[in-house]
Structure formats: C-alpha cells, structure tokens
Length: 117
Image (cartoon, rainbow, N blue to C red; front, side, top):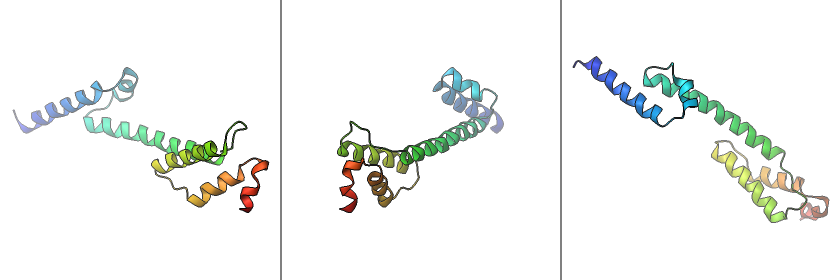
C-alpha cells in the first residue's frame, strides 16, 4: 500500500467513528462532506452558531430576570446566580456589581429597604 491509500483508509476510519456516534438527522447534515476534516469543519460551524445563540439567550434571560410572586428572596438570588454562572461558562462576562444591581432592581416594592442598606 502506498501512502495515499493509507491516508484514505485512516480517513475512512475517522469518518466511521464520527458518524457512528450520530443519529440520522445529524448524518444528513454532513452526508456530503468528505474527507473527515470537512465533517469536523461543518460540525464546528453548526455548534459555534448554537453557542452564539446560547450566549444571546442567556444574556436575554439575565436582562429579563425578575423575582416571581411566590419566590423567596433566597431562591431568587440563587436563580440569578445560576443564570450568571451559565453566562460565564459560555464565555461571557457579568460582573458581581451587575448581578447585585440586577437583583436589587428587580425585587418587589416591599424589599426596597434593601436598596438603602
């Protein structure tokens, strides 16, 4: 076997491993890709778009954050911190000051004394 045949066989093995972990919907997306490098580029571009969409969704969730009527302050703070952690895990930055400001600004009227404290 020459070097080119070895590369073709190795590439076919990589393509087999990649596609064996996918469902049919995913395979349909990459079925026209060859060699395996093209598959990886296609998958990377799809997941990058989802990652950007995820960041936008999480940031929107943070900016629309509001305490529910039946929710305790502790649960609300925990939920807000959870959203910020997800945003940070996605690679975006939310400062502690921004988090505290968001929480204080969205507390119901009866908790306005927290602002002064």
